[in-house]
Length: 156
Ligand SMILES: [Ca+2]
Ligand SMILES: [Ca+2]
Image (tube, rainbow, N blue to C red; front, side):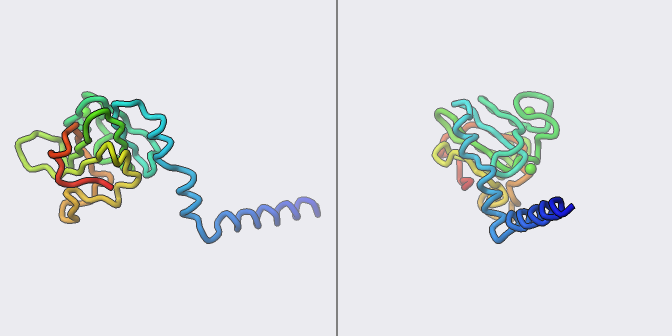
């Protein structure tokens, strides 16, 4: 009985230690996009439901102009879900769109360059780098590979 209560006290103490002054720092250490980038297949872009490249939605070697349809790399519920993205492409940047991309009407975008590698939390990023177009978080519906010159807004 005495032993059990000593363990219980210890557990409480450890719990309090973990919930201490820097919970966000320990969470950041637990998940990062750096290891995902390391293990990503060259030539592909990846998208994840969570921040810090947690919960892979899919990956693509080519374009997917509609993440809500039932074709290509991203389908159905993948649309409006990405919270972090990764670019391990061989040659180009990835241009993400707020809506399925018809090419005929204005569609707010944000690009992720190969140099940047990944955006670990899209809640930091607005389409067109302007809050008027809304957060890119949980709002991406399409992507295409483009040259740098096709991007006016870059994810960071
Ligand atoms: Ca999400
Ligand atoms: Ca699709």
